[in-house]
Image (tube, rainbow, N blue to C red):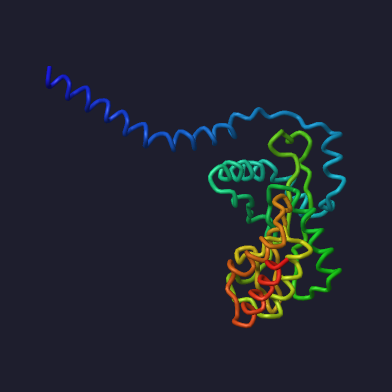
Length: 241
């Protein structure tokens, strides 16, 4: 009886340990399963037309022809991005050897975000800042599903990341934080080339407030000393208001 009691307790303990280790993996599997089990269906042409109306469309050029030709490969890559986003939210773009200089991204709202950023940059005369050209690409009708109907096609920005911001760059990014705080000006989103800064995250879905944007600019970048002093001063002023 004593040995039987030990065996039962050991079995129960093993079950508890197994469940505690298995639960996180089960949760992850269920999150991925929801992606796989989504039933493809046709998207209303009316709703799609309304969605496309406010976006800059990809012109009928070589890029569009290449995308149409390789659409199955593109869709497979985008579905993979959707699966990865269940684990990491920043997995939303793919590159292809047959489409050099461009990136294919989820979230066509990035096109609208890029247009908004360009308007602010032009209006405020921020000559050290730049935004890559981006367009909305409508997936061919017979390939549209509830998961994918429109993609974002953007020119790839070449340069360096994590370089210290100069005072002049910090001043212009500070202005952008005020008028377009969704720019999310942390180091991974800033591409340095020559003396200019390219903004590579144009998704306006998460609207940061001015304080949040300035906080990221100050604390999530490398800064030259005078740039840091300037941004710290701006932060103190903003806190007072």
